[in-house]
Amino acid sequence: MKTAFRPFHIFLYINYCTLHLQSPHIPQRNTKVPFLRMELLWKAHMKPQLIRLVLLVILVTLLSSEVAESRKAKRVSTSFEYKAINCRAHSASLSDFGGVGDGKTSNTKAFESAISHLSQYASAGGAQLYVPAGKWLTGSFSLISHFTLYLNRDAVLLASQEISEWPVMKPLPSYGRGRDAAAGRYSSLIFGTNLTDVIVTGDNGTIDGQGAFWWQQFHKKKLKYTRPYLIELMFSDNIQISNLTLLNSPSWNVHPVYSSNIIIKGVTIIAPVKSPNTDGINPDSCTNTRIEDCYIVSGDDCVAVKSGWDEYGIKFGWPTKQLVIRRLTCISPYSATIALGSEMSGGIQDVRAEDITAINTESGVRIKTAIGRGGYVKDIYVKRMTMHNMKWAFWMTGNYGSHADSHYDPNALPEIKGINYRDMVADNVTMAARLEGISKYPFSGICIANVTINMAAKAKKQPWTCTDIEGITSGVTPKPCSLLPDQGLEKIKACDFPRESLPIDMLELKKCTYKLHSIKHA
Image (tube, rainbow, N blue to C red; front, side):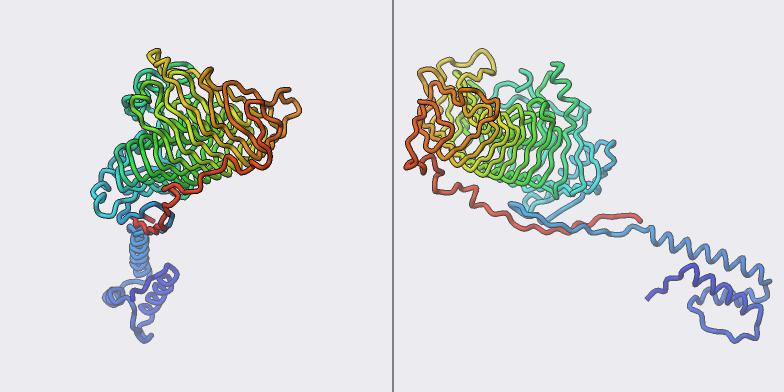
């Protein structure tokens, strides 16, 4: 075992040696430093003052050596665990690829380099990229299959404001054009296409879109292309987005599109309530999706279910179906908690939402469509929803407008059918419901049961507005409009959820444990 010399020990030893040379009759003793003892014996004739000088030089050398030893690279381990659809066999840290977390240095190339390197493990158990604590400025980068991006609790991805770091892409085929401008769109901050088994997660790490720059450009109408989203995965399967905080997105926050088997869980999304189009989570032409345990404050719909726009969505023909939304809390004074449409031309079917809380939000559930949309919204089920300080509890409109272009088909009529709401409570509501179908093509199969809506002090005199709709109610307060006749308490079991579970609810997350090794200098 090596003996570590400390300054105080060496100081005592110098004095001992000096005393020994000054007094040759003192018996010699064995020393733990043989080379030092030989040096002293060889220079026994030197004057004590010179001896002290030599020994002090040796002391400095020993101390320098010890400090140098302490500064040698040490292997530091970081251990953590989380739940995921799949665990990975290989892992690396962004720091190992030149990443600098100072909030100023661009890390776009570091992300690209790290992900490129880790792609070699796709068929060998997959790989994980760990983002340590720090502020990591970056432009858009793309993910790979069998891959996990994991953010440390104190990691912040900062979206670059250098336009050159945002590649321009073609419009989505089911939209035909961008949402902000007719041309293409900027790639999302975290992007992926044609992937299998991809995870974006962390210990509540943060992704900050620094959206104010983009909002200003949007309001000034200076954008040639549609603003980027924070996370977009398209044409992909087996996706997990979880345990993250998303701030100030330039536009939509999370956008899975043309994808399937998706879990979005434990995500906090925050943007100013007046920020433009900062939708929370927008499943778009997706199948078998589960959104749960999310908290959203935004300037647009908290969850917006979509499937393409007018003739482009009709032609693409890719519906959103088998969607579960549960334990969602929403604040959005100018939009809806859950919106269906308005881009719903590929169809929306079998949406099940439960245990939803809306606070200071314009509407609880909103269906948005128009002539020219085509498609359908059907088999929608919402239960156990609590609403506080609302403009409308329920809102449906068949005259939303906002077409992609002037080429839409005026004969493309949307079908709205089988809309079921039950077991809800609302307070301080300005208007219970605004339900407006399409003339000669009413929205049908509307069922509302066991719902109590307490009106605000300055509520509208007429709590319900109903045109071109068909349906029933049971146990609803205040009394609904005549187009929704009350069937009595014996029908209280109406509007209930389907009994069978969806496939996405069968998917259980695995417990993943990792121990990352990195080089750290003292």
